[in-house]
Amino acid sequence: MAQSMHVRRSATLASLAAELGVSRTTVSNAYNRPDQLSPELRRRVLETARRLGYPGPDPVARSLRTRKAGAVGLLLTENLSYAFRDPGAVGFLEGVALACEEAGLGLLLVPASPEREDVAAVHKAGVDGFVVYSVPADDPHLAAVLERPVPTVVADQPELDTVDRVGIDDGAAISGIARHLIELGHRRVGVLCMRLDRDRNDDFVPMQRQREAHFHVQRARLAALANAFGTVAVDWASVPVVERFDHTVANGASAAKQLLDRDPHVTALICTSDILALGALTEARRRGLRVPHDLTVTGFDGIADAERAGLTTVRQPVLAKGKAAGELLINAAEHAKPRVVTLETELVIGTSSAAPRTTEERWFGP
Image (cartoon, rainbow, N blue to C red):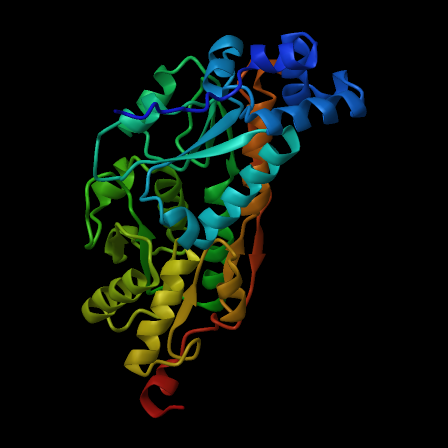
């Protein structure tokens, strides 16, 4: 004879209210609006809920009722590990998280590989708005975000007239690096840059690709360098520029090798990120080049490892940028017109830059 199975049924909001002799609104307030109840009543509701096995209000049902998910989405067109590996991304993520903490909101990472066009993750994300972190103008994930009827804030790029944006003046910032090198006497320079477009190009960059890059931050930095060196009669078309799709120290080293193999007489490597510059320092050591006596190396971002390495760089406030982006999104309903927040940067002169060697020094040392 089969034994009967007794399955304990979880309590519901209605059964808990009946047990306590209060309204369902009172039970709901104990979880969602505790300030509406006395401490004693809230304690009694929560203790009874634990005893009866009531798990709390269904968050899905609540979001359907309120049309609020209680979370901010951070669109990162990289693999998920990038958010925890890249120092700039880590600082930005911390800033967004701080803004969410202060507003009592959650944060949902929505990673999207740069080499895939599947935008399902964007459509499925249960969020009240998106912070879009540094994507190209033609990115399909960005297009999917803009199709959602929720507020959006762009950090760094692209520049859009229809949404809020927070960033820095990239051209002005890297122009400080250029002026510093020009004043030191550098004319034969090379550039290592981050990816310029969604298609992979781990190679030298022709002028057309520089001018038409969909990553406008990198495009702006290259254009500013071209303008600055043009003032001292350097033909930018003759300056070797090497691009790397993946942003790692190892790729910075390989890019430096590729450039120096072609032109071993460059006196300075200008890198559009500290990560690439740290790789360039690695390659310089491998070649037995002394930095800055034999080769000047500069970066961009101002990460902790760059400071420890004595890198000449541009320091930008990545944590403040993330916090500002989060606050723009959280307060989006208060402003009808798109806003642009431009943060200040600082030129940091380290020990990795110096005047190029003279002809006598090249011939006779030291």
